[in-house]
Length: 466
Image 1 (tube, rainbow, N blue to C red):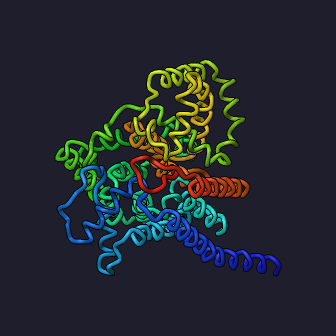
Image 2: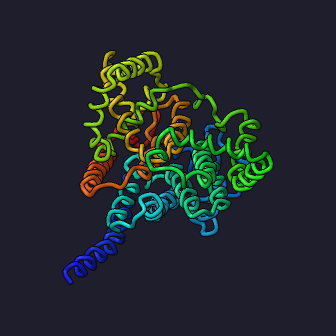
Image 3: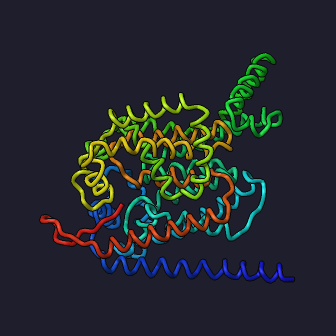
């Protein structure tokens, strides 16, 4: 009887929390729009371009814009018939997108808890985890501005959800829409494509494999052994299986091949001002991401500290080689984009100019930290299918390494996907993560509201963001 009463109280609390959280977010949205009614940073490009579309001028294009017009088209379809095309209502698109991120995250977590953790677990855990993803500071910050980040995450989360529900054709279509919003989203389409390939191959071998083999390199050996067996049975059965594979992958394949055609036609991934985003090799981006990941996911990563020191003591020669390699990477491949040095409206500007750029040895002092955060990052996904581990590492490398600009916004989707992939969390970890996220959100909006300065060539006040 007492347990039933407790369950009812928890369910009631869950139902009440959603409208209360939504009301709080809307209140914050209105407040932030009052103190920042004018264009903020890249809004000076996004808003006028959308207003052109709302006016029916679809041939007008600002050459300084580097992304495809997905966001502008979505906003035009929603707002133009209602004649609400102005900066406030354009920003409302991202407010709605923020709530959609919460809903999609909650549904994805429910699905993952069944398919990957093989159990249904407390509804409040899934609810709080979904809140944490919605309130993830580098993503939540943009809920009151007209940027591509929130809608881009909407599209990727919807694609992942449809993929988990095995609606692959619709998932591929949503993946295509996500690419039209932001070109680099093709990486996440490629991620689910690779997952689909090995899901199909798993049907051939998974029954004869233990969980330990499934998450180790033995998985690839067994897979290769099965392929060889198929070849030995005759080329006819192998060709039949390959054809079945191609049919199953056709929707994702069309999207990927279409994007390849776009790159060839456009002579690159960037539209508009290609000089602002020239592809490069910037390996420290992975190091920055692992440290960034630790800042927000420390409750899930810090628990592996004993394993880290055991690994060092057991494999000290290998660890020493890794530290030397990381030092070499930091020494020869630490790059900085001119924007980082010049634009004082971003946190990275202050970190770089106060520490990385000021003290020569500072970047080397971070090497032991990188070794720990990289180890705990990889440790957090070691329970996954071996190829999924490799797939995740390759895809975040493809997203981050070509980027010269150090931009926390590039870390958003790799972070969210990592949160979905880690093992079932403990209660204290979720609570600690929630507290961390709330503190960072309070600080970021306090700084945004109170740290005001002016540029000589700008009429309106400038503020600090990610």
